[in-house]
Length: 184
Image 1 (tube, one colour):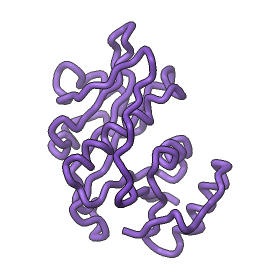
Image 2: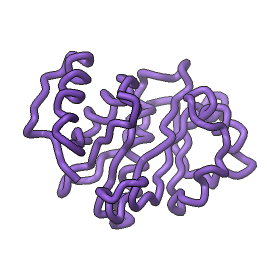
Image 3: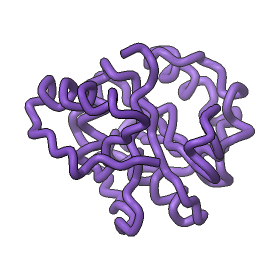
Image 4: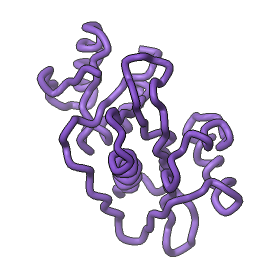
């Protein structure tokens, strides 16, 4: 499984609540001087190109979010809502994607990833996107678990995806329900 595994936000599911853990704050970021260096550092540590210019022109207005530790004012997480109408794939018309979700390892398992994903998802839904998705490398099990628990559903692009999703669910220790899977 080398290509991204897609998850879709189910039609009609209400936007997620943005519950920020105690000791942290979320704010929209323009990815400019104030946050750029911190976000690029997080992206590099998360395995993405550490260059916000590569995607900044596709971020919705007020669609990039940072998590800030209140005690230090340090940026410790980021996620963006991207205008991504086809993700190089015709099966995602007029779509948006949550992307570049990274939380500093020292601040993980506190709910920041879920809060960031919820903020970016809510921004896309509020903007009226018909298709909201997340693409995740299939071996990034913590990210898959976070998005599944947040309300996203496994996406089936073809019948071969059923086995890939079953394997991912087995690895996560979650029951697999084919009925929960969606097709674009």
